[in-house]
Length: 81
Image 1 (cartoon, rainbow, N blue to C red):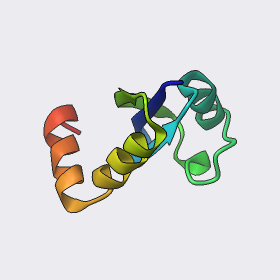
Image 2: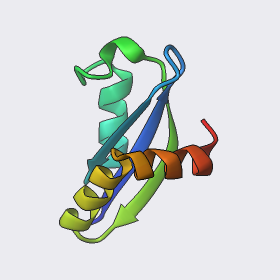
Image 3: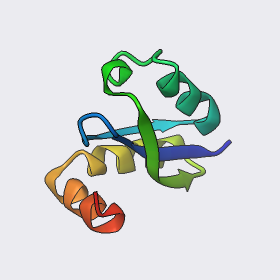
Image 4: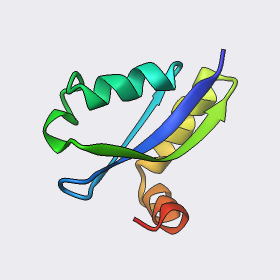
């Protein structure tokens, strides 16, 4: 099974949302339909970055990194947002 760490950018407040999932298409659909409480009022959202991992623990570790100061700085450089 493949796990994906993803970054969404809100067109409304220009803030990022970082998450991980085993089914990116399903999860993006949930975000777009307003089924995710933390992004419901921040729609529309755009997928601006993603990384895939074979191991769930590695994906979760990378997600946690993106939520640190160093991780946010890395994302800022990579996605320029």
